[in-house]
Length: 408
Image: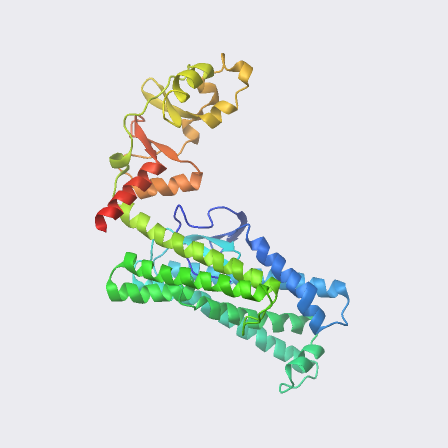
């Protein structure tokens, strides 16, 4: 199912995925877990629901309709998340990317909502969009059924039996979107209802971190509840209105697990930003970094540096300027029989391909860039290109832990 936007932070889910293109200036990214949704919808419809509704239809038609439903469900989730992004932009929260997940999606704003009101407006945009899609699909299905001669007062089984492929698809899509809207209004962060809850707590307490902690705890508890219900459904229990069966149970367990992870990560991200946003990189970097000459051979680099010094990567300095960074992964690319003639300059990552930080940039920005590049440390360089130190992920997390301990 879908959930509201969350910040583009280093531990937030959704950092990777397949780019699908831009819609209204927002980049759509598909997370690998979206394949789970696609597969579950396809199998549950093509292998079960449509066979029960229309046993007389050929298998090719049933599976084609199931595929169309899977695609439209994906489109519905995308529109739900794009609504968050578009409203976010209107309330002063720029959002450039949306990642679609197994349970819906996640928007990636550049910063936290500026006010509780902005959070509230952005949170309700998604469920409102899903509700509108649900109503439109249901009304369209009713119109198609009327054209087929089915009266509005007929029972559900009669209506389904008389429905053609188009009406059947809409009869499934309408309630699914309405359920999507209702599910997202559950008060567990980072679901939309959890966002509403956080906005209320934020407005009441005036403390974003405390509001996030309480709302995330509700989201984590809700996630574990969904996992438990999914297990019961997998063992044959029918839970109104969720139903039963192993497929629905597995789906619910996945949703619950991802919700728990997202809730925990969301609070950690708020804690990271609150703790590190005002800390300059120059305050947490290691300035006593050992560097190497670009002409140093790989065998000397391994024997004299990597095997003797507790440092993951070594800056390569030429004429006092940083020209690159060499790590063990770089060294591995050099053939062993060429180590005596291959230099650090041959295997290093050059400066123009490195992510570098200025000493005055925030420690939080350093952590975001590490997450974006998938690295554990970054060089800190002043405006003249002189290396001032290295900042490591473990040092940033240590700083956060110490700052949090002081608060407690």
